[in-house]
Each structure stands twice: as structure tokens, then as C-alpha cells.
Length: 394
Image 1 (cartoon, rainbow, N blue to C red):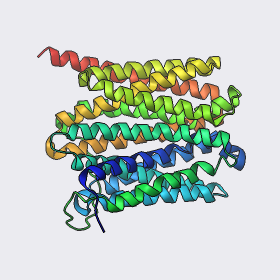
Image 2: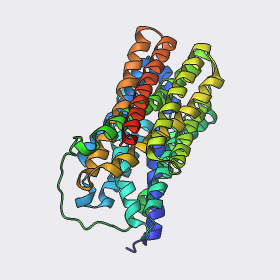
Image 3: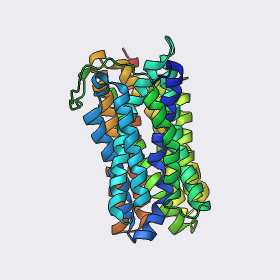
Image 4: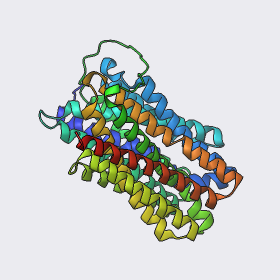
């Protein structure tokens, strides 16, 4: 069997990452439709969303270092197989059990691809182009997240079977990724199967930077979770806007502007970008609270754009600071702490929001959530500015 070259393998890996991340946001505009089909409330929506993040965390801890010994391709093919399984489970779902299973499997798939696909793209990049490969990985990742929600909303709105058509299309998109990955070259010399849990501890040299970056990432992920799990219900129940396209567009805006934030960050310093990201997260949370209180679609759209830009700046600045300051031998460990913390932000606050909605209603719960996110962003901003003053005084 003829293998692909490095350049073709790079394209295949980028496409596989794109389709895998696309599949993770396909259910986002469909949550209100699942609610109607299976008659459940907002709490269960947030739990369904939250178990995806738990799947990602499990994959990061269990498989974070495995591709360094087993090889990139076995992990990436496993991730694609899990993405296919998730789509199949959604296609055949006749109850909530397959839906829960599909979200967990999708989370594990995304957790595998988050680190392994990025490492593979860097491996395949020509000498001197590794930074370019890292940028491509970020662009492809966030583009997939945004396009997945938008594509699903369009297919659900115009298709005859909104709860199945998006996942049938997903399977079609995954097929060439699987074939291409089988033919792609391996970049790691395999040294055998050795499953090790990813260490999660904070190197003392980077403690302050890591705590600030992870806390800001936690808040940014919580905002992303609300747009994915709660805002579709707000559009439908409060604004009486039932089109899944609109929910998909909002999520697309969020991740598209997050991508813009990642790219902008590369033109400014890490500390400045993190502070600016916190300001934008704070502003986005306030605007979202206003949008919910005033039942304003314009404010909700504006909050998606502002919050997405803030998330992009925070993520890029935090990772850059961690990678720059952490000791080389503990850099992967520090990054793992960051990713686990951010994915916890994608699950626990969203589920807490679902509990609050069940006890009160959507509007007061959403406003309270925005206040909490704004408070966290403000605390990180104050800590970042204080650290900058201390540094400048030496």
C-alpha cells in the first residue's frame, strides 16, 4: 500500500482534526429539538453537554502522552473511530441513553485529537515551519467547532429529519479522513504500549502564571458552555426564535471570533493579551446579562462576538505564557493542568447553571451566571495587573 508524503499527510491531518471537532458541536443547535422529542428540562441539557467535557478530561489524563510511544496514527485513527461511533449513536438514538453515550464518546475523541493532532501537524511541518503548523492546528480546531454548529443548524432547519441528517452528513465527511489517515505516514518510532496517567501538578516556577491562565480559561470555557447549552433554549423560549440556524450562527460567531483573538494575540505580548482577554470576557458577560434581562437578540449576538474574542485571547496568551515560563521537562504537564482546568469550566459551571434554571427560571439563572463569570474575569485581571506592577518594579 502506497503511503502519502509529508505534505499530503499534513493536509489529511488538518482535515481529520477539522471533521473531528466539527462533530463535537453538531448537537448544539439541536438541544431544544431533543428536549421536545424526549420531554426533558434545561438541567438535563446541561448534563448532556457537561458529560462531553468529562470525556475530554478523561482522554487528556489517560491518553495525553500515549502517542509519544505508541505512535501518532493509532491514536488519531482511534479518535476518528470514536467520532464515527458518536455519529452512529446519534443516528440510531431512540432514547436519551444513546445521546449521553454519543456525547461521552465524542468528548474522548476530541480529547485525543486536541494534543495528538497538533503534535502530528508539527511533526509533518517542514523545518522552520513548526510555528506555522501550530497556528494551522488552532485555526482548524476552532474553525471546526464553529462550522459544526452552523452546518447542523442549517441542515436541521432545511432538512426533513433534523435530528439525524446532520450526523449522516458527518459520517460522509469522516469517511475521507479515515481513508487518508490510514495512508498517512507515521512520524514517531513506536516503542511499545505504555499507558501512563498524565501527571497533574503545578510546577513552582510557573505557579502564578498557570493559576491565572487556568482560572481565566475556566471562565472563558464556562461562557462557551453557556452559548452551546443554554443560549439555544433562551432563543427558543424567551425570544420565540425557533430556527436552529440562529443558534448555530451564534456559536459560529463565538468560535470564529475566538479564532480572531488567537491570531491577534500573536501581535501583542502575553501579559497584555491575557489582561485584554479578561476585559473582553468581563464585558461580554455584562452584555449577555443585559441581553437576557432585556430579551435583546442584538445584545446576545454582541456578547457572542465579544466573549469569543476574549476567549481566544485568554487561551492563546495563557498557553504561550505557560510554554515560555515552564521548565522544558514539565511543559507538557503544565499544559495538561491548563487544559483540564478549562474543560472543567466547560462542564461544572454549565451543570450548576442547569440546576439554577430548574430551581428558578432561565433568566435569573443566566444573569447570576454572567455575574459570576464577570467576577472571575475581574479577579484574574486584578491579579494580572498586580503581577505586572511587581515585575516592573524590579
